[in-house]
Amino acid sequence: MQKKVFQLLVDNTSGVLSRISGLFSRRGYNIESITAGTTEDPRFTRITIVTSGDTAILEQIEKQVGKLVDVREIKELKPDESVYRELILIKIKACAEQRQGVIAVTDIFRVKIIDVSTDSLIIELTGNQSKIEAFINLLEGYEILEIARTGIAGLGRGSENVTYLE
Image 1 (tube, rainbow, N blue to C red):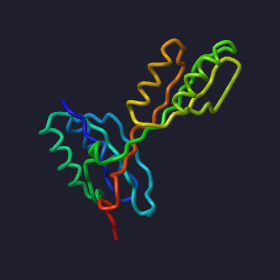
Image 2 (cartoon, helix red, strand yellow):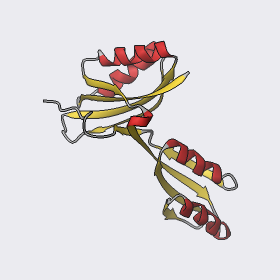
Image 3 (tube, rainbow, N blue to C red):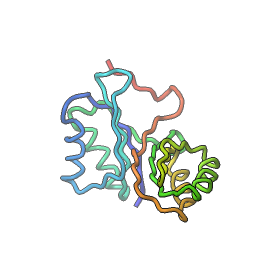
Image 4 (cartoon, one colour):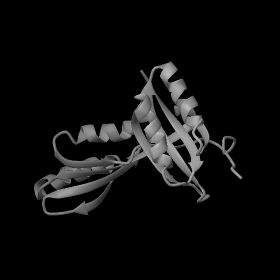
């Protein structure tokens, strides 16, 4: 099993995300992460999908998604040629005595503390998946109450791979 990150440029129409996820569902393919947002041109949406499978399955996914009517372009975002980021919000149970320890860990990772209450903190971290996993591992001694993750967003490096749609 290998993991691939695909970037799609699609028409910004209602139901496009449903049609794409429906293809994955019908074929029994796994979506590990999916993010979508309007591009600089509001007629189009950029979707980043992280999926896994053997080589044949990943090739099938790319071909079948590329055939969907709303899909203008699909390309693989290779790790050495792309930049990936994910946003995570973590709510940690922390009384007044524990806060200094949490703050020390957050300073190492340049994490933002975005909410403080009497018994918890909410932390915001942006980075690649390995940075996020390393941070979560450092929180092992604290009680994590909730986690919300956005999934990966990514772009290819440089300007030679930019797609211009008319």
